[in-house]
Amino acid sequence: DQQVKQNSPSLSVQEGRISILNCDYTNSMFDYFLWYKKYPAEGPTFLISISSIKDKNEDGRFTVFLNKSAKHLSLHIVPSQPGDSAVYFCAAVKWANNLFFGTGTRLTVIP
Amino acid sequence: NAGVTQTPKFQVLKTGQSMTLQCAQDMNHNSMYWYRQDPGMGLRLIYYSASEGTTDKGEVPNGYNVSRLNKREFSLRLESAAPSQTSVYFCASSGGGSSYEQYFGPGTRLTVT
Image (cartoon, rainbow over all chains, first blue to last red):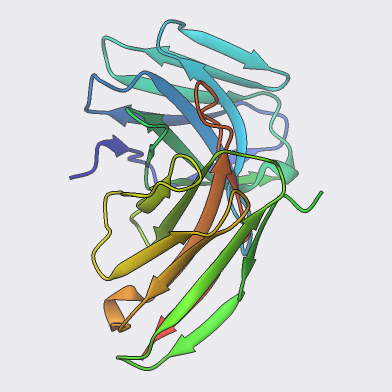
């Protein structure tokens, strides 16, 4: 039973435009959310996070938005760069720092 | 600062063989984790260790055992490998407490034939 869902397996965006990656969750007990980026043959690397008491967190080109009533979060990358091409996972924390991951979205930024 | 290291990087086993995946971190983190990643399924938690001397089951613990050898090292053992355990295995660590960010190793790609 997938508690964190990323319904778009892939996304292609032109360089310089905005990339929007979406994530939905089913469990209202999640209280912290994270985005990870993964290149092939490497482990996931932490990108940005947000607490459930906030609705927005920004770090440079990356912004995460949280809509608790809709159980939805999104990651915005502006402007997108070719080096952003990777698989992006959203993850949620419920207890004991255990992360529940989505299935990932493969972002391709076209030069 | 190597971060989280894992050995081996690749392994092929026959059904019924056993092996141990090794993980070490040099960030003085309290908590360590083992995940598996299968195609189309994201990462799923196998076991975790909130602190030295403690281990607990995650979402998919069947067929695995773990040992928190010391604060730095956390190993994952497959006693009798099965084809269903073909996967990429990631070890991670975090500071624990209110620090939710986990830092991952490069992974071990395991094939069981």
